[in-house]
Length: 118
Image (cartoon, rainbow, N blue to C red):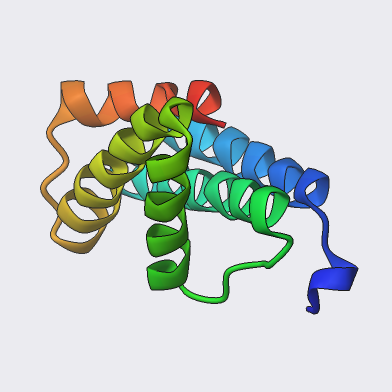
């Protein structure tokens, strides 16, 4: 998809959809899949922010992460978001989904807080 075909609102809508899917999986007892869906929602919301701020849709996780870091340097309000984003990469995606270490209380809290992140 080209940047002209997407807009931040449609990406945010996808983030909300993934958040709902994460909560469904959590209710079904599949914390690992819920964590990955919550991470996906986080990533999509962050991609929407990057697109809204730069008018360029990021194509890779690295590009999204680096651009968010750059934005946070010039906009202190984004700093906390960057910290939360990085925390979610580690706990939801890497530790829980990729390695199967899904510490129940902390992981569930991060999944449920995804709507706040979005």
